[in-house]
Amino acid sequence: MSVTHDLVRRSATGRPVIDFDHHSPAYRDTWKQLAARFHATGSPIAWTEHHGGYWVVASWEEVQRIGSDWETFTSVNDLTGTENGGKGQLIPQMPYRLHLGESDPPLHTERRRIEAPFFTPKALRQWAPVARQFLDEALDKVAGRGHAELIDDVIIPTTARTTLYVLGYDPDDWHDAAYAAHEGVYLLPHDPRYPHEAQARLRGRFRDMLAARSQTPAGDVLSALATGTVQGEPLGLEVAESMVNALVFGGFDTTTAATASALIHLTQHPDQAERVRTDAAYRKNAIEEFLRFWPPGTGIARTAVRDTEILGQPIARGESVYMWLAGANRDPLKFPDPDRLDLERDNARDHVSFSTGHHRCLGSPLAKAELDAMLETILTRLPGLRIDPDAVVGYPSIGGAHGYISVPATFTPTSTPTEV
Amino acid sequence: MPKVTYVSDAGEVRVVDGLAGDSVMQTAVRNGVPGITGECGGVLSCATCHVFVDEADLDRLEPVSGLEDEMLDGTVVDRCPNSRLSCQIKLSEELGELRVTTPEAQE
View 1 (cartoon, rainbow over the protein chains, first blue to last red):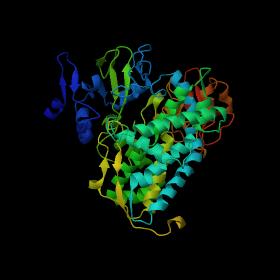
View 2: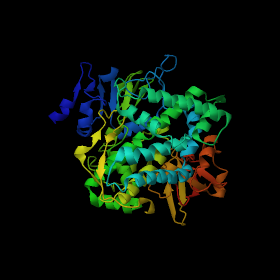
View 3: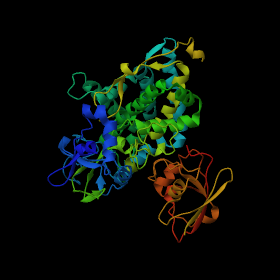
View 4: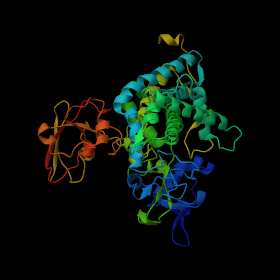
C-alpha cells in the first residue's frame, strides 16, 4: 500500500502528481511495474511535471473515450497560436506539424481518406504476398549461414521494403530510406550519428517523386497524395510530404519492434513457438497479445480544448493529456491478470497499441499481415532459432518506440534455401 | 426495443436485442455475434464490419455516405448492391427490426 502512496502524491492544490517521463531510462527499465502500481492506486490518472507538464492516463476505458472525443481532446499542433491552442500528438511538443496526425475531423477525415483505400482488407490481399516475397529474399541470404542479425538482415529488409513498395518508392532503393527512419527513431537529434543528412536527402526525394507523380500518376500512395484534394482544394506538397513522412517514419520501425519482441519471447518458449509456427488461428491471437504486452508505441497525446474531467479529476483547458497506451493495455479492469502474457487471451485484440478513435493506426492491417508472415516463416526457415536475451540491444529510450538496435540470432543452417 | 437478426454465411441465425443509438456493428461485437470484426471501432477506417442488408430493409436505412461508399470498395468479400458497413447503421425505435447477412470473411 505504501508503495502505491509513494508513486502518486498530492500537490498543494490537491492534484495527484506522479514522477513520470516516458523518455527516461527509469521509464524504460521499470514501465511494467510502473503500470501495475499506477493501476493499483485505483485511479490511474496523475499529473507529471516533465516536459512542461502533462496528465498521464492509463485507464483503458478513459483512453477509449479520449481518443474518440476529438471535440474535447484535440490532436492539433497549433504552432502559430491561431487555431485551438493544441500542442499536438507528441510530448514534448514538436516544432513542426504532422499534418495528418495533428489535425481533427473533418479536415483529418478528408486527408485520411486519400490513403485509406491502400490499407483496406482488399488491398491487403495485394500487399501480403509482396511482404512474403521480400521476407523470403532476406532469408535466402542468411539461411545457409547459421547466424543473423535479425533486425538488419531479416526484419527491416521485409518491413521497410514493403512500406516503400506500397508507397510507390523503388523498393530496391530501400536501404538509405530505412536507416534514415530507423536510426532517427532511437538516436537523439544531437547525437553525432543522427541521420540528419540522410533524412534531408530522403525528404528531398519524396518531394521530387510527389512532383513527378502529380504529372504522371501511377496508382500508388505517392500518386494519390500528389493528386489528392481536400475540401475541394489540392492537398498541397507540404501536407503530402508530411503524410509520406508519417507513413515511412511511423510505418515500419513499429512493426519491426513488435516482430522482434515476439521472437525474443518465442525463442525462450519453444512450445509456444511451435504452435505459433503451425497454427494460424493461434498465431493470429498471439500477435494481438504480443502487441498488447509489448506495444511498439508507448503513448500519444491530446490537448483539452475545454475544461473537462477524467476519472473525476478536473482537467483545465489547454492542458496536455497523455494517453499511455502501454499502461492502458495493462488495465486490470479490462485485461484480467494483465502482467501475464497469455497467447490465448480472449480479448487480446482490444488492446490500444494502434491507438483508438479517428487517428487509429492506418497501417494496422499491413502491420499484422507482416507480423503473421514473419513469425510463421522465420520460425520455419531458421530452424532451431536461438536469441541470447543478454545480447539483445534495445533502444536507449522507448518513449518513441519500444524497439531494438540489435537482435543477434543463431540457428541450424539450411543449404540451398532457394529450393525450400 | 430494436432487434437485429444476423444470418451467417453458412445460414446460422442469431437474433439480438439491441439498444437505440448503438450500431449494428456494436450490437454484434457486444453480443459475441461472429462474422463482424469492427477493427477500428466505428470510424470508417477498416472495412471489417461489412454486411448484406435484407432487401426489404434496405430503403429504410440512412443513405450511404461518400466515405462509407469508398470503404465498401475495400471489403475483402466484394460488395453487392445491398452492402453496408454495419458501424454506420444506427438502431432506433423507428427502425425497429433489421435483418443482415454477414459475409464469408471480413479480413
